[in-house]
Amino acid sequence: MENRSLAFRYLSDALTMDSSGNYQAAFAKYLQSLHVLTLYLNEMFTSLGFQKMLEKNKEIKQVLCMVHECSDRITVIVDGSKKEITSPVHKINTSIIPTESITNVSTKKFPAFEKLQNDNLALLKRFQWRFERVQDKNAKANLKLELERQLIENDMIAKRKFDEVSFDNFF
Image 1 (cartoon, helix red, strand yellow):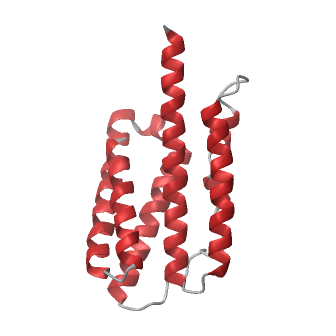
Image 2 (cartoon, rainbow, N blue to C red):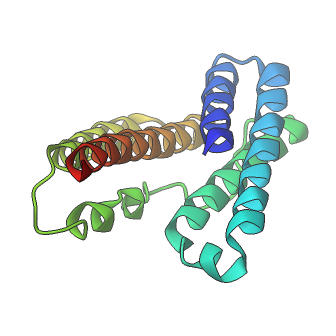
């Protein structure tokens, strides 16, 4: 989990540098993000094994999506052009919102997950509004990465709060 959090920080830094035009520093941060994300997947594989890792399908897909976006941004920087690589960036992927982790927890209501769902819906609406107004494909790619990062961070925070509440109720 530590590597994943570190990758989020690197990715956030890379997006900031990329959007400000500091492509050399952004390039380095994207590479660091890729490295840390692959370490995270490798650690997951070695600690859980292949079959258990496959049970975390959604998490793996989110990490692989981040890897893909980082490699796309690196390719754009290497090409030296302002043209974005053709990828389905035109619509924000709403499947990133972890609704099943919210609804399938149990029949008991958890304020952290309810807040997560409300925050993510508001965040998604804000990003869709911003996404529709942006013309530059680089900016659209950056918005998509930023949205994914924030959704995953929100999910991690809510899970931590849930674990704290569950742990407290255990004793």
